Image (cartoon, rainbow, N blue to C red; front, side, top):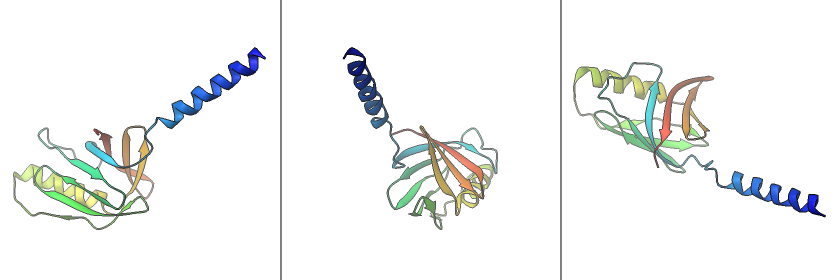
Length: 125
């Protein structure tokens, strides 16, 4: 009888442990890697994911776009000017993420296009 009790207890812990992992894409993230362009030190990109929209703040401009079945649609942004190196990085970011799919790996969100990761974000909230 004791081995069965131990087995049930182990399975219960395993199930509850799995249930606490956040598998939802929804949340706020910070860019950690952009493969298309080296980010200047003072460049910060944040992203918020909701069920049907994605948006955030780049080093200069705010941006957003539709999210359908985990795929990013056409991105729109404000058009403020800024330091040339930040504008270059921001433009590379917008071009890189257009049409990407979102893949969650723990707290890391990968933006993937044609099987290649183009950007990586880390969950902050």
